[in-house]
Amino acid sequence: MLTVAPAWSLSGARLVGLSKSKQTVIFNLGLHDGVKDGDYAVIIKQIQPLGAKGLRLVPVARGRNIKINANNSVWILFKLMDEELLIKGEKYLLLSESHMLSGRRDPRFGRISVVTNEEDVVREVHATLSDDQDRLSKLKHQYPELVPLHGKEYKSDKDIDIVDVEKWGKHKSERYRSPLYKSPHQDEFRRELRLQSFEKLVTAYLKKVNDPNFNYHQFYDEQMKSESGMRVRSSFSTEYEEFLALKAKKKAEDARLYRSLLEKGEGWSEDFSDEELKLVLNQISVLQEKDRRNYIVQDQKRFCSSINYGMNITDAQSDGDASYRRSGLYSLEFDFEGVPIFGHPTLERFSLNGGVRLNKSAMEAGGSNTSLDEISGVFGLNWYPVYSPSIVEAPTVFMGAYLRSGTATVEAPVVDEKANYTLLSVPGFKAGMRYNFKNKFGLRVALTMESLNLYRYEQSSLTTILPEKATLFETKMNFGLAYSF
Image (tube, rainbow, N blue to C red; front, side):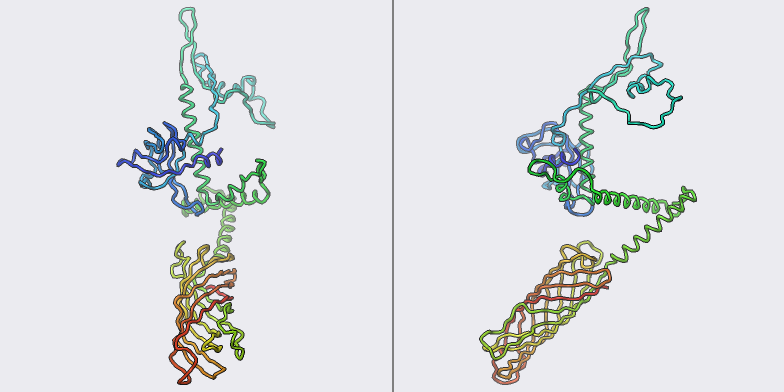
């Protein structure tokens, strides 16, 4: 009732009309969408994605439908919770009474008339409402209840009994019944009961969805059914689920204790006896130690340095030159990374890095294979889409772009020629993963792709096979050891 019914009644609606007083609105939901004339609804605004931590759905207003056609409907808002969230053209959720209570049987009513003397009205009405539980135990106070075998039960074919109270009147020798209290009509009472049930369902749904531990993947997994229509998961909680529930309850109790200490200030202990205060102080000491351990483990580090070893995936040497072919193409790079804006949930996902690289590579020039020795500096920007770069014991995926500049020496051993080049790479791209351990060390794996643009500024002979300009495309797999501080 509290989870499945709201899933049926979530109707996405767009606000297509809004009065100046914000008391009358028009939504693009009509008869074809299941809206009924005179329907009550709660208008909900989603302020964050359902997977985000924090408040996700906020009630905006309560209203009633006054006019409806095939494609839209007019609603009067009789209670505004947050009128600033009412914006024309925005999307909302309409939780309607008819949808949320669809399929529910209307309650059966019975009517009871209590006729008594005026001085016994209170006692007789109380006895009637309690189902006359003490009618046969006038000496109940002399016989205490030791062990209750089961709770008191009430059996009836009616869901609700409406009570009318009347008193006996007398005129000469005739007695007659005179009304003292008349209960509301059944239809009015039924209407009030439906509205109360509707509001309880909406409250339960908002409370469930706004719970930080709630997610739809887990919810649908628990409700998954087999082809035969039976639930795949048992309706009984496992030991692990009970352990998690107990842990969450204990965490909530600890949070309430901390909150009460902060609210009362230095006088928080005045209501405790010596024995109670001793227990509470011991509990606070345990909580403080837990917080201290968590802080030390999760203390986020702003900077990270790493040493990376790069292995070439691409090889630009020619297979036609069998006289010389360089082997063992690799690079060594020292990298320093820092988070410029620390503590912001979004901006702390971006980091800047700089470093120095020694690269042993090779390429083909003039039909001959040549060796390339490079030293360069790099400056780049990284983005961590899943976790922040300082998270501990979780794989942090990153992507980035960078600028490289430096010098390179190209040598052709077959013809004994050498030339010096300036090197520029704009831009290079990388993607990888970083894993930080609790001891501040970590591992780093990254794939880089870049085009090295070479411009010759010095050569060993007047005529040379080494080109004046060259472009070398390189792809490397880099493995590194990182240290955070």
